[in-house]
Image (cartoon, rainbow, N blue to C red; front, top):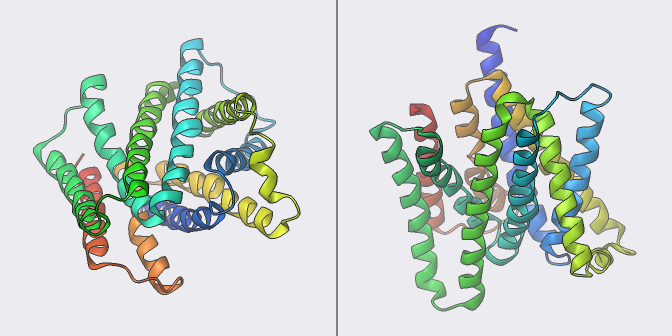
Length: 298
């Protein structure tokens, strides 16, 4: 494939991934009115796992060192089992728009941590770009806080979102440590397996594995929506982000893949007829621009 065409398809894959995750976030928000975050996470994990198995098998897996395998396993437990559950819980408490916006802080936390863990020092422009993202998110949160004041759900939602950012960043760093010697889809599969294992054990220990899925009983509409949302987000969205990394520059792929907050503003305004506060629009644009500028300059 011609280089320019490859980069074009890579960019389109990254943008489509961002759009699908925005759609999935909205749908998970609707499903979350009837199901727990843990149940939604386990369902999306199982759907993604089945789809990955179809893609990967019967091709043989690469031989992995034990250290690499356990790094990916820990990444799955932290990033998928805990991180994605907190992500869905944050959507339930703060809404899809604010959760995806706060999610733009993940590259910020990851980049800062990488300086200490991998000695990945960045230029001044990269640090300024990350500060721009922090400013954009802070602007929206400050505007929201002035209206919300001492709302308990708001405060607990912010705590959950903060933990979501930290656990997802930890999962990314652990994956980065391990992914040098394993195919990206195979790494995704191993992480997903351990994410599902962790969620299953969690449900069994809490004695909620069956009760968590009770809302699906005699509710085929909810089941179809859950399966569809899991497919377009956890599988297609993730697969397109990996494809983008393969077809174009990593900086371009990650930057374009971080535009979900912009897409969700369009979705909520055009299709859901929701009024987007001016502060949300301005803050989202600033935050996303910060992420894009950061990845363009590294």
